[in-house]
Length: 233
Image 1 (spheres, rainbow, N blue to C red):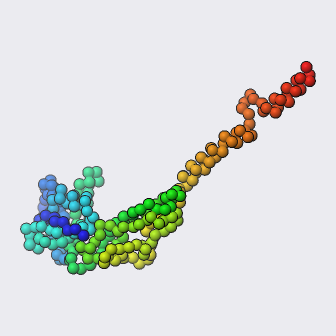
Image 2 (image 1 turned 30 degrees about the vertical axis):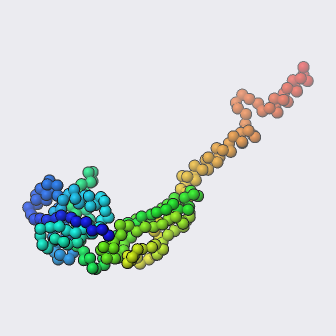
Image 3 (image 1 turned 90 degrees about the vertical axis):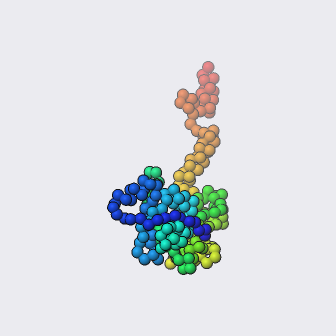
């Protein structure tokens, strides 16, 4: 996994209004947990952090650049971000310090690739899980775990035990849970198909034995009345 730099500085936690001032200056208040012992309050550049979050997996390793010796050259991963509901601006971030020589467990998203065979029969690709817990060294954390869904037909299910993992990446699971399946067409789609079939048969039914329109008589009855009228005349 690629390592990126992130400039940070230690910050004071009091007075309370200091956090708002940090945000007004375009920085983001954050906390670093992990091997540093007690949590350390820091501030990082808002634009820089937003770029890191938007272009990379949260598990991407970040190398801290700081004037504080206890922070400089430390490696962290982003654990959580708090954002405003409307603008999406980052309000706060939590980082976790990692030791590059020790394996750790993280959640990594699935990336489904390929076109399932069941799509040709009207099937629908239905992911049952969106991420997986893995264990590996920090620099080996993948951006995502690729899942090839090409062979799946309708009702086929792919379980976690069938997935392939690169290098020393190890999946963590207790039960062999399903990851993705191809579902049959939905009830709504079946209903539409049934209506189309009925409408397609309607013209033939009308031609063979549909009742005559109001004010009209069937051709056989018209012919019979014509004969009877000729006899009377």
